[in-house]
Image (spheres, one colour):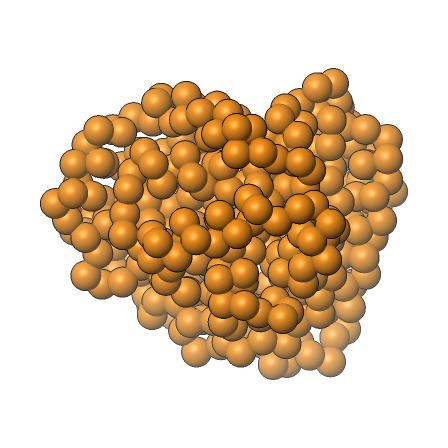
Length: 393
């Protein structure tokens, strides 16, 4: 699904400060206690690693329509510290909305990126990892065959996750940005081939842990629109105001299917509800708004933007010709034709559920995967330290 990485950088090796998450965690699950969103993970074989004595290492890989992203981290205090990462725009889903198949060139670009990910995984030897593929592989006729090739040639075993799982992982990854006073939140993740929305309602009680935040999802929707599919349908190079409005109208039609649409609008009018966006579109807007000469995650992640500030920044983008978008350090060539289609999706969401502010999240699926894996291990560790007494004893 997701277009949720840094706007300008296409590759990264990270040594970031610790990411803090809630103190108590449990595995994220669906209603009824099914932990299926996080039940599939890989345990890597034990191998000599000089870093292993410092604690377990976890890895999360997200292969989307537009990006291939990897994050490797170690638990730290009540969060985790990033050890390494990788991001590359591969456009795996290029043309899928037209042909229904992954193209040869797109698959080769992706294979090369996955080889880089494999090398990093070999270097760090994570204790546990989860490798997922989203909309491009879900939608393409040859998606499963491509992943079988990846497993055979590269040795990475990726799973295709369903849309609900994707939405829940994004919620888990971003939940730390919801302030305590919020009665609810609408989270959206603008992807390359699809976009996910999740309405969280805390009026009946709020989960104590970030890892259980998806239990508060009242309604969710996966829109069959993303930055790549919108660009392929309407064009993304020369976007006039008329074309932009056509994009917005197209997305708005899909939003009409959101269950509880009117009730969410009413709640926004009477209660404090956060609008939280995790996508390259929103982080790009934040970078432009801040006037950054280069993208800086620490300044963008968690930033609040007022409605008027979003309006102003979108208008600047609409008036920016393609060559200037290419040259802009917060956009770049790889995103220059995708940023306005992404803005159209964002604009449709803002018009449907008007809020005074939006919070920008430079985090998402990978962080959600890491939190869920670490959560599960913490629960298992507590259970082993305090085993249940035998009822017959």
